[in-house]
Every structure is written in structure tokens, then in C-alpha cells.
Length: 253
Image (cartoon, rainbow, N blue to C red; front, side, top):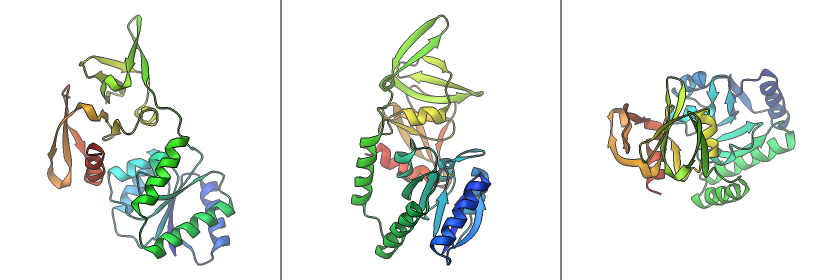
């Protein structure tokens, strides 16, 4: 079986290769990728890899960004030191989530799970729902309020009253449904983990949007989408082809 390792720490990738070889000598690591950019380039072309082992924090960003650019339909086992991404991992085609340091017993169980799923040909929606239900029960509470520093004041804003977050010349801005704009000392990646994914979605690298702010969705060239929101934005919110279907499912859920 051929596998791909996505990992930016040499020691971690070497350990994973050693463990895989110890579990099954017939497993062949065809390549090790260490950046989001290299993953997009690699998975944009056909590959005969049957399974991907993927870290989340890479040198140039989070591995979830890969799915905004390519249709990656290969099963994924996430290997990471961070447990807060577990729920998001199962919104892509993940079959398991292993916390570092990776141990041989856990890895062997994950491989058995992959083989069983492959033998069955499909992972049922019921299975995914059950996994999500368990993970959601383990998640910490999502942010319900933000205390925004504005001039000489601290202004509390309910998350449900926020239309969208976006990056403007390197600064994160928050726009309320009442069209009030504030600056935040936050990163979109951090906000993405704090916000309820039922209400907010990372549309692209520049925007996180509230489903209640969506006014219209239009088809765009190449299978992409354009999202119009209220209050309106000065630039287009473009949904990539790879994300178009999951985004429509999210809006329609």
C-alpha cells in the first residue's frame, strides 16, 4: 500500500515512517510533503497513494487550506499535537485523528480502521454523524461574546450579531449585522476555532462569514461561487470549486 506523509518536522516524519514499516513492511511512503503549497501542487495531479497521514500545523499555514484548492478524495489520518481541530478534521475526508506523539498501537488501530473501511467500500453517513456527535460533546463551549477595544472604550459584541470577519491589509476586521466595523487583535485561524461552525464558516483565506449575513449565492466560472452578504463587502467573497459543495451543504443544513 502506498501512502503520503504531510509533516513539516523531520523527526516526526521519520518516526512515522519507522512505525509504519514496523506495522506493515509492505507500506510504501511515496513522498513526504512539508508545506501547504507543496501539498496543493502534489494533490493537483493524479496520485496512486491510498492513504494520507497529515499534520495540521505546517510551515506555511494549516493543512485545512489544502482543501480550498484541490479535490482531495483520499482517506486521511490526521496526526497532530493539537486536539482542538478534531471536529473540523471530520468535516473533510478524515477517518481518524491521532494525537502526537504517535504510538505504534494507536497507529496500528488507525490502519485497521482504514482497511475495514476500504473493505466495506464506504463510510456511512451514520458513522460520520456518530463520530461528530461524540466529538461535539467533547468540545469546549464556543464564543458567545467578544469584548472589542475601540478608541478608549471596550465594546461587548454578541457573536450572533457579527456578520463577518475579514482581513484588511493584515488586520482582522469585524463587521456587525448593523454595519459597524471594528479592528481585532486576532487571527482568522484562532477565530475559526472559537466560533460555532454551525453559524460561521471560513469561506476563504480572507473571510469568515455568518450564515445569517448571506444575501445571495451566485455561480462563478470554474465551478466556483460568489457570496453576497449584508452588509455588503468592497471585494468579492469567492468560494473555491473544492469548497463549493461543502459550503452549499452548510448553508442548506
